Amino acid sequence: MDQKWNEGQPIYRQLRNLVVTMILEQVLRDGDILPSVRNVAAEYQLNPLTVLKGYQELVDEGLIEKRRGRGMFVNDGAHAMLLKAERQRFINKEWPEIVLTIGRLNLDIKELLVRAKSIRSTKDSGNSD
Image (cartoon, rainbow, N blue to C red; front, side):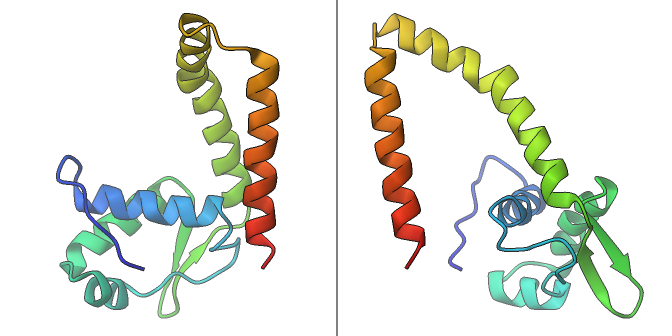
């Protein structure tokens, strides 16, 4: 993966968000082992302490666990927990802004739903290869 770091947010936080995205997209599944701190540090040319700090946030959130001498693993239920939290965040923060934008632009809801279905079916057919 070619990762571009954003100057506006600490790298450890961006790394944490990258792992969260991988769990949500099920690139990493419940029970999977995460790449080692050393491997991630080498791959992304980061200080191992930065990687460790990002992983520690995930441990603190209950998404991954350290197994002494074995590595870090995605906790059972991490995907479900993240999905629930992301849905709630979307409904509470993003959706109200989207609704206001739809009204402000006087967009047709039926047309938007047709376009959404088209986008989704295009995405789904692209993932089946």
